[in-house]
Length: 154
Image 1 (cartoon, helix red, strand yellow):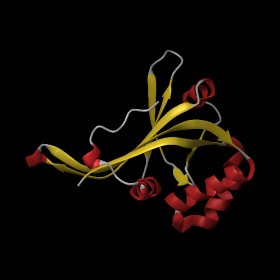
Image 2: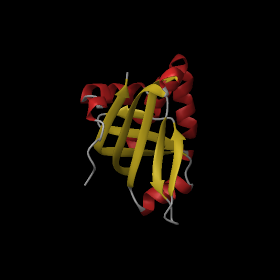
Image 3: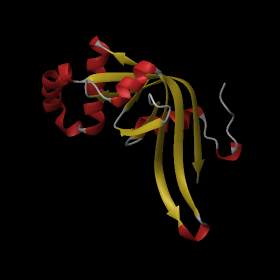
């Protein structure tokens, strides 16, 4: 169903894949639009137990695309360094494939708090208040990972 990675010499193990997913600053979500073209959107996210979660407004193109076709991919790139004299770049990356769906209830609130922990760790109390005020105007999407690959040039 999925192609094997061509550059096996750059493949990273599952432990490093999880590290990249946990520590990445942002990722790029790819969905398929109604006109058949891919749509990519950079997002803040959290990784928890084989799921990638992100928050969203209550409507919009990415949610419409996910409702129509829940198969998505998500890419995270970190630790980049351009190597001009080598005509290359040092990097770590992960590409995850999975099914996206809305999450609600306790899981939604847990994810929103985890997003606050990741991106605003010095403002946890304010973050809890913010979540309480904004949660009804926010959707949370979870991507259950079915295939993931990691790659690095060191």
